[in-house]
Amino acid sequence: MRLPRFTSKNQKSIFSLYHDSMPYALDIRIDRSAASTLTEQICFGILAAIRSGALAPGARLPSWQALAAQLGVARGTVKSAYERLADEQVIVSSRPGGTRVADHPATARVAQAAGSDAVPELYQHLLVGSAMFQMGVPASDFFPVSLFARLRAHAARREVAAPAVYPDPRGESEFRREIAAHLALARGIECRPSQIFVTAGFAGALEITLRVLRVATGATAWMENPGFFHSRRALELAQLVSAPVPVDDEGMDVAYGVEHFPNATLALVTPGQQAPLGGTLSLSRRVALIEWAARTGAWVIEDDYLGELQLRRRAAPALASLDGHGRVIHIGSFSKTISPSLRLGFIVAPADLVDRFNEAVMCLGSSPGPAVQQATARFMSEGHYMRHLRRMKRVYSARGEALQIAMERKGYQVQIGGLAAIVHLPDDLPDVAVAKEARALGLAPEPLSTWFASDGVRKSGLLLGIATADETKLSIACERLDHLIGQHR
Image (cartoon, rainbow, N blue to C red):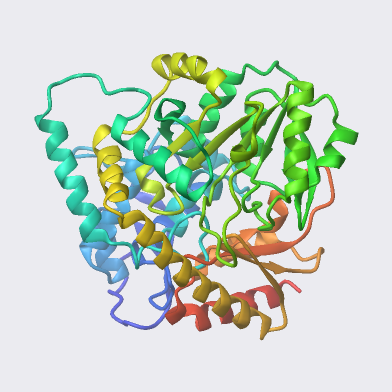
């Protein structure tokens, strides 16, 4: 069956595409008024079909030319969607076989998990793209793209022209020097470049750190509750027992942890700006945490995920700056300040652990390529990084205030936590379902309940990323979100 070409530029349309060689319907939702791009909407439609089982492993997709004609979009738009899915090994293309759903375990699990959250978990970055309220990414519309592109191009030419040698697995020396200088100025950490290890983002840093600490299987680790769910899962994958420690306006309740989990050997904290509530760990609790670690021989991993990007006041010094016992491992990254696509993170190791970190990265480490490190080092040394941070603080402050006002006008209780606005909802309202359905509207809020430990009380709410809350689209985005929440009341 051939469908007439879609020609309207403004209306929403849902297509059920049938083909003689495809005994199934492929539903693609196109909404030209949505904040998400058409490419992202096509990706979502195909991934949803895989999840539902409509597209099984090995199923053939229409050519991107044919699908573009049916959807009434540019051929390049569909081609871009196919390329994204191919990069993620969701689909494969060949001249004799055409484009088909990949036949591998990850895709098979997605196809079999009808009604589950498998697709958002595996391919969330594909589904949300640069959607409104997306968390974990900086605003791209104010980044000095041309400047950084020039620095990267220059660094790439230097890398290609240089002799073929293995790069230093600890990271480029000039980059490590710039990080050390920046930490001394902005985070109060006095360290040598030899204590810094460049990693593939925060995840790479956490993996290396857990390996170096050699915490025994089954040991207890303090984890903020609520806290970053990927960190909690990382502890579980390291075969540690995550002990939920409650959080209030002063950050992690250290006294609670000492009383209820006194034998813990590790604590993972976000003291600068607690994720997701945004509180700063108070000085008395910082001192108590370090003293507990020194007294018991425990380790503290400081996730400084926002660094000095504090919007409402001057950022507090890093926890590691107070550590006189060598028990705090500081982890930072450039994902929230420059871009997560760089995959640039770093570890500041206590002096006594430097040799163990050296051994680990020499054997296991995989820091990003030299070019991206050299470009970022120059971006910092020429003063561009600090100027960019100052500018983004102003932008994010304005966006956070506008977002808070917009949602409070609709009757919601809103608080700003880090780079997210927390919209509190009744505890019986399904925030996971709201967040999932919001993706189809070009919105990407995160459910607050998933940040809580699974075996305790959970609070319902939505986390709205401030960085991606474009003021020009804010009004209609808040209206759509409010309407969606109202449907679940």
